Amino acid sequence: MKLLPFTLSSNDIETFKNGAIEFSSSGAGKLTVKVNGAQVFSAIPDPSESIKFDLFNSGINPGNNMITMSVQGDPVQLNNVILKIFLSTDNIIKERTFSFPKDKYDLFVQGYRGRIELEVTRITRQGSMGIRLNDKELNVPAIQKGTNVILFTEKEAVEGTNTLKFSGTGGWDVGEVRILLER
Image 1: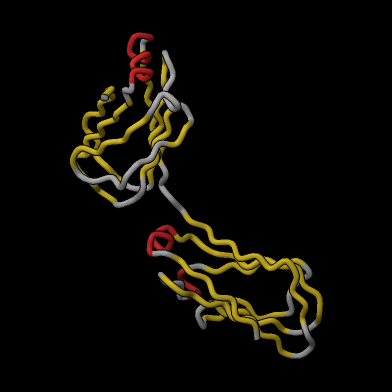
Image 2 (image 1 turned 90 degrees about the horizontal axis):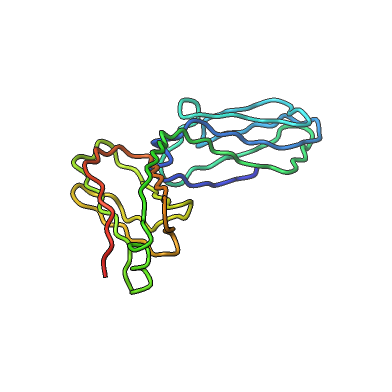
């Protein structure tokens, strides 16, 4: 018998679609695979096998989970065993542009930094938000109701047109978004 533990967070469980155990095999024994004690496969495996499982047939839960593999009869050699976990997220991307004229962009050299104020009026679903400025990831704290502040420098901004991309797995009602320069 072989035991293969794996861990899923509560966020992973919320978006868990299914999982698969993939491998190549040789031998004539009957392989039985269980996920958290629930049998998901029992047969002589094909030379290239993919065993799928989901929430309904495997008892997946947040925290520790266990895959057990056992063989009856002749031995079975498994090679290149891979566990794949598929998550289904509602990752939405919104894109906005703004401009820094030369005189405003030159303020970065004088010690100024950029400040994005994101006003969140309501949180409909918890999740994470990512913000990219000109394809450079910004450091975004956990989004809360009220004013959220995200800082940036001249390394992320450019003179002229700048592109902001907001992406996230949560749900937020966003009011005003302000882009400022501060010292």
